[in-house]
Structure formats: structure tokens, C-alpha cells
Length: 380
Image 1 (cartoon, one colour):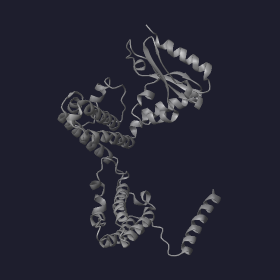
Image 2 (cartoon, rainbow, N blue to C red; image 1 turned 90 degrees about the horizontal axis):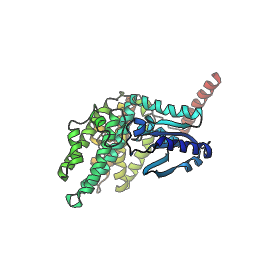
Image 3 (cartoon, helix red, strand yellow; image 1 turned 90 degrees about the vertical axis):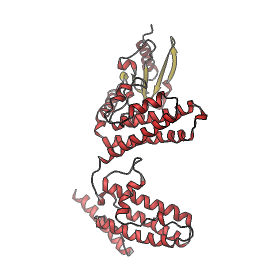
Image 4 (cartoon, rainbow, N blue to C red; image 1 turned 180 degrees about the vertical axis):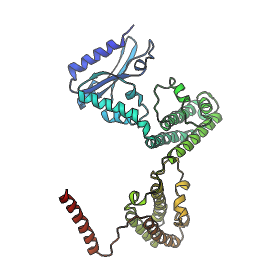
């Protein structure tokens, strides 16, 4: 029987002899690291190159009918894994070192492991990461909607597999954890998620085992809706409360140019520009107001009708509803009202708008800002 550690020793000897300054870390993960290896298990290696030449050490081979993959992970990618920005966090978290080039490399690698242990404290970051998986799931959802039974069960299962795996990644992030084992071996961990949709296991079973398009489609639909509802509730729990002066400082000055372009489009009866500009500016203002109130940006689980509630509640004009290819006069009047009302809204919330009537006023403002900064530096 092949002793895979002998294979590891041969590779490390190769590294020491041929790449002593080019590879920072060599480690293994997977079944051997977790004590679950079988007779057919390979040793899951990875290494972190220290120089571009280090990537040349990558090699794939079969020894005594067992496949091995000695593959590189950059420090940047290892950082993403440790930050839960990639679903294979367990590669770093559960790995065991075989080789380390220097004490500095060891400290850097251990810092990644420490980051994995502390990431569960950052619930909002993990909720935002969950959104990226939901976005990927929605691509498969679109493809599934284009499918029908005549296309065959294989394509339906492929798309529903994409929905399910991304949904599970999203749930892991919401539960502030990562999948510790590979697919098929992680079922118990998935079932033990504390936060999950009410029919999660039933839907997962239908997606995996059913041969009915309708049942698979219904399970995917319910699963996605359930997770998005949970995600919305999770993100809502991280609302910090309003803070306009800090969060939207300078935003009116940026929007002023957009208001002017939109007014010009209306005056010239340029409907194409008015269409994109009016809907775009209304949506962006709504997003900024949402951020100013809650301390987080609306995400994939926040429908436009939800994050535009504040925009509507304070009486800002609904530009999208006034679009008319034959008459842009009402839209022009609404843009002028929005420009004034938005400024008043921000001012009432304590936001200072940098507005000057003359160049001299602007120069005096710049001079005052410069003088203050010089005085502070001199005082230091």
C-alpha cells in the first residue's frame, strides 16, 4: 500500500533542492488532514509561491493508480479564502504544514488561520458575501427557467445543482461558517445549520433525488425565496441608524451635474437620455438615502420598491412615472423640484453643501482650508 507521506517527502525534497527561495508554504488538506482517508484517498497538496518562478513547481501525476495534484495558491487567493470570499475556506483552515520557507512566511500563514477563526464576528461582511452566491444561483435559476422537460433531465439537474450548491454556500455564510468537508461528506454539517429556510431539507432532497421537472423547479423556487428572505432579515439586523453628514457628504454636488444633463435632455426632447437619466438618478438617490439611514447599501435581497420607500415617503418626485416619449415637460418640472427638494432634505439632516456664487468665494474657501491644514501641521 502506498504511503502518501512518502510522496510528500519526495516533493519537499524536490522543493528544497530546486525551489528553495521560490515557494513559501507547502501544506495538505482534505481527508488525510481530517483523519477520514480511505485506501483510494490521495494527499491533497497545495503550495504558496513566493516568486513567479515558484509556479513552475506545479505538477499533476498518478502514482500506483492514485492521482495527485500539487497546485499553487497565491497569497492573494489564500487571503480571499481566509476572508470567506471563496467557498473553499477549509483548504486554509484545516490544512497541515509540510514545509515553510521562513519564519515570516509561517507568521503570515498563521495570520490567515487566525483570520478564519475571527471572521464569524463580522456578520455583515458574511451576509454581503452570501449575496454573491445568491447572484450566481440566480444565473442558474434563469437557465432553469429556460429549460423544459423536452431538454432532458440532465440539463435540469445541472442548473438545479448550481442553484443548490450556491444556496448552501450562501447559507454557510449567513451561519458564519464554511463547509468543512467536500460535497457528499458535508451533509450533516449542512443539516445542522441553525439558520435555514423552513423546508430546507425537503427542498434539498427534491432537488437531488426527484426526476420531475415540476418538483425540482418548485423546490428551487422555494429555496431561493426562503434564503433571500433570511438574508434580508440578517442584513436588516446590522442597521446602524441614520448618519447623513458622514455618509452622504458631497453627494448633492455630484448629482448636480446629473440634474443639469437631465434638464437639458428634457428641453431638447432627447427621450433616450431622459429615460436612462431619470430612472438612474431616482434609483441612485434612493440607494444613497437608504445608506444614509441604515449604514449599509441595499443588496440583492432588497427590491427597488423596498429601498425606494424613503425616497417616496419624503415626497421626492417620481421621475420614472413621468416618462413620456411625446412630452417631457412634466419630467423637466419634476427634475427641477427634485433638485430643490433633495438639497433641502440633506440640509435638514445636517449635510453641508459646498455651493459658491463667485470664484472669489471658492478661492476664499480653498484658502481657508489650506490655512487650516498648514496651521495643524505646524502645530504638530
